[in-house]
Amino acid sequence: MTALRYVYAVCRPFRSALQAQLTGVAGAPPKQLTHHGLIAVVSTVPEADFAEEPLRAHLEDLDWLTATARAHQQVIDALTVVTTPLPLRLATVFRDDSGVRTMIEAREEAFRRVLDRLEGQVEWGVKVYAEPEAAEAADSAGAGRVGGDAVSGRDAVSGRDYLRQRRMQTRAREDIWQKAAAFAGRLHEKLSAFAEDSRLHAPQNAALSGASGQNVLNAAYLVPRADSEEFVELVDREKDDAPGIRVELTGPWAAYSFTGEFAEEPEVEP
Amino acid sequence: MTVVERREVALVDLLDRLLAGGVVVTGDITLRIADVDLVRIDLNALISSVNEQVPSPWGELT
Image (cartoon, rainbow over the protein chains, first blue to last red):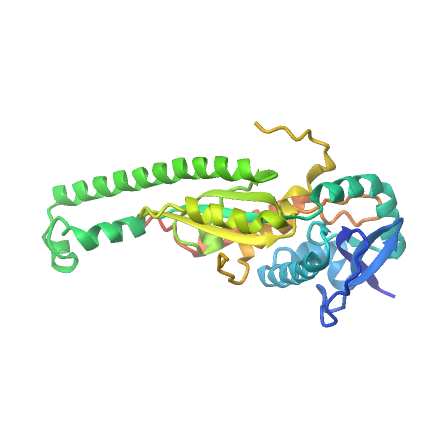
């Protein structure tokens, strides 16, 4: 039998059933493997795709990565409805059920500790973008631009005018970037104070995200599910309507960004 | 009740979490394929390959 076990998450036993139609990364339905009072949510995946070599190749294939990530997320999402899952990293694969059991035994205490910490909590993602283009558009919609209208003005402007425009444009961009960065700092401070915990992800590459503007804050916040509405309202309230700054909220996510290192960091507010 | 805009989750947001977050399990039974460095390297390759095709948004200020 050339099938491996793909593990999505570890959680405590839960009562509600998962959706009957739910499928995992290779189309097989996820199952619960109970061991030592913990549950690993696993599905069967073909060795031809998930053994080390083929997986290494697949991870460089954006279409494959997308499909796998979405399928993984779908299972985690379904789990989030019925319990607080501790999500594992993408593509955590074992040879068989006994490999999964051994892993649970080895990490039992750490799993329980993190599950206790995350119980009832969800993750919200907040991103701030600097958008000089939007600000410029708002600007030029109001006041007329140097050199007349854009079409005929283009040929008419002198080299000096052109350079001056470029300089002003560059300065305006820097200005907006600085404003956005300062705004992001203040927002992060407020949201961190509200949240149980926070993590900063690397700003996203615009070419990969397809988002307009420059990502200046990419943060995750751990928030009790019960306080989520309040958190969302807080983000809404803090949203700056200034042209050139955009705030994006994603979630609720399972606490992906807060499973890290199994460290028992003391809960100290900076 | 605040209405939160629900769009399809963006792939980058998902990868931020699935490749940089989540519990990393490495034991001798695992195939050691969830190795962070491996995935990061592959993702970097991916990003630079995307970058080659898509001109920088800052490069075309006219």
